Image (cartoon, rainbow, N blue to C red; front, side, top):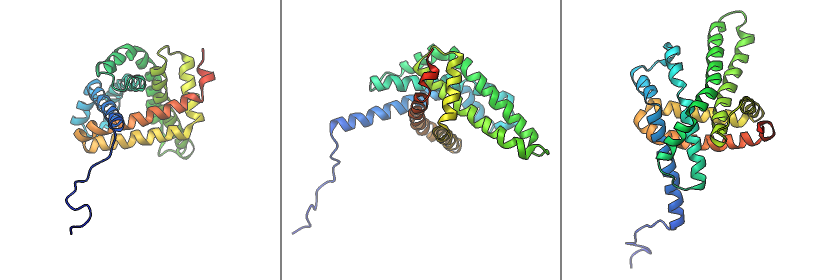
Length: 230
């Protein structure tokens, strides 16, 4: 007699609802990756040509301004996908067009703060004031980056941005600093992977990371609801 189960094919016992849920997540990730690649095409092309972007901070700083509206559009798409499992790709680009101006104006102060703090950090690194000011400036950079991402998630949830909204994002990022740090680590890992394997990285990684970041931003923003209310 043959061994039990001999000749039988291994089958995955996954129901239709489970497959539908898996495909919905795959669809969101692929759409997010495609949207990020299209809306940040100038930045991606510049990075493909120059592998040391820190040598041209002004040029790449200007290109990085476009990442804010892209993040807001992706977060808005994820929010729409929570209601409609597989919204069409065009919804992401509609969100990008709708939120572009507000997202750019909201993203700019955080990018400027990061640029100023980073410049000061590099200038003071080897001076006598370095040991005292460098840690403070590093914290400022991290808070600004975290707050900018949270602000884009808040803008995707409520497009009526105001100064109070930006302050709420800053407050929430400081209050929930651990989640903000997790977001930055995830984004840094995604950037490293995309830099090492651009085609595969852009096709797979950003959407997965941004979905986790979006969920974390929701938890961060919930801690600042009273502050964000007009």
